[in-house]
Length: 337
Image (cartoon, rainbow, N blue to C red):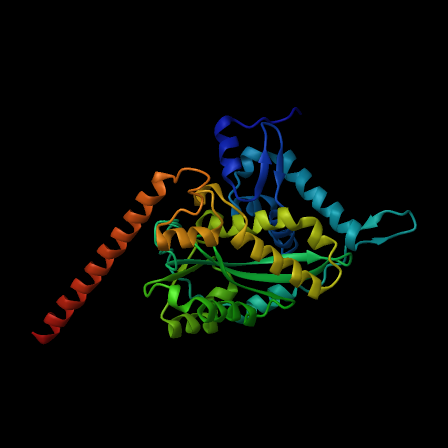
């Protein structure tokens, strides 16, 4: 059977997928993030077709050969790292251990799913309005130890506003991320802000929902199995792992991993320039929005589209506030009657 080449449209969709590093007419390079998520879901009993669909791929466009080859490669990698060898020096499939993540998820799982209020309007609002959150796995050291990173990112400025690294998947570190967010950025968060996440067990837990209610923050969730509804957050994790891959894998201790993550977040917020942020870092872009002063004026001309965007965002915000005030007045009048 010959190679199944992708059409131009299929290739375009692959290149837009946050879990793809690069793609050509006949091959795909997947991100480390996707490999880890795929393997976890596969171990939990999901079929390859279901997993590829979950993360935004068309499994039939990929074809059975690509799906099978990818799964086989991950099996071999797991066998090399965790497997036992028999007298013939061949790797035996790793013994399947009880999965603590599944046990934890089952313990805190509820059916409290919020609507997809955001609906992919990631950067159409001002800073401090759309707050995207997610968790990722980090495998580090020669023993393939596991840590978990919880992050909150501003949808408009792309700033990482808070983050917590943990050796445990218990929900406490996710709650700590939200508390840290308000400790550091309380005055920058809009009164009508929302937290957007996937439908993971942490975000449907009673403790998480109660925390948001106490902070008077609205909750929004991606639709089930739709990675595109939280794509910017997934994309951040993908880029981070691609850039830090070798450093994370060679980090031998948890405290050293903390330093690696701390240094990267500082670099990302202050020095990692992004074309979609007017060629500025996230922190610079935030200051640009607040002051109206383009920090690269002495080097290059200010992109006019951003000043227009800021103006439109502020107009929309004023309009929304006016409507809310009007509704409030109408409700008061109705109550008096």
